[in-house]
Length: 382
Image 1 (cartoon, one colour):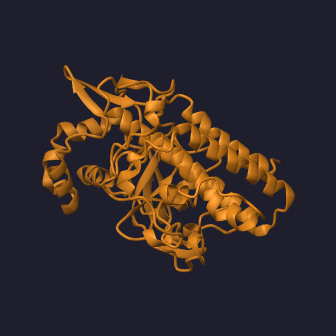
Image 2 (cartoon, rainbow, N blue to C red; image 1 turned 120 degrees about the vertical axis):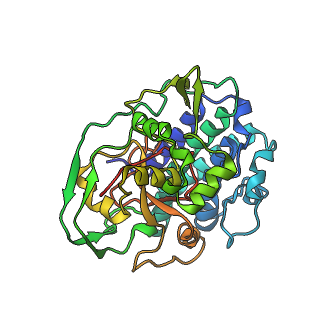
């Protein structure tokens, strides 16, 4: 079994490994408000360990740079002022080398702390920090993909395109009505939004064992799916009209053939592959067109032990709300999840960009319903 120090270093090294394919020019641009530059991600995840652990628990720790707290705090109001989110791409300074020096400085101090005087509080915060960085590893991939997709050269970053996945099962899974236990039992790591095991009653339902493919979604498009208001939630219809959405994110038609931008460049769409980069609004409209629906997050969790999942986040028809026993932690850690429980929808599962050992049946991801840039797909229910 790996020690906590080994897990820490493995996570930190994976982040830097993901960045090895980047050119120095790739580290700074911010292509949308909802994305962050790679330089900001690698600095913010480091700031988390310095701010949440080292400043409080390592005697005589020297803060690397007093300005970094302002530059690389994300949304922690209790910690202090921070740069506005949409200005993260303006940080041409500090230089990239200094950000990597910051990582080395913090890693050295963290290893010294973990190997000298760890306690339950330090260990739990370190595990939280590891999982926090794993979340940012996925965001790093999805954010840089969005930025590179704006480049007319459609640059290749990795050999893997992260989208060539196929269903291994077909048909429908039947789940009987009954009372089911939902949530994490707290015997291993979870985020606080998963805690509070509780019971829910579910009517009998069926859930698809396969996710919607690109070819199936093309049928929706060919039938005028993006042009028929009857399939869309009102906010979704307004969203596609206002933003001129006529196809999934990264899709491009040339000479009657469909292509999509991937992390390995612009590639022809294989109709048999699982659809990805789809918003909740699009998922809901497709389900309505099919005469079906999206599963709730509770239906998904109950069925998940019998489903194949993990290559695409799966939209559910559940709003992101607290479980009955949810409690907000004291201090900055309490800002991690609870304050975002409004106007967002739950996704379940994991994706091809999710870090290894970072998925579980109870994991509750959440994004605004118009979000497309994550590796998200559609599983239907009835």
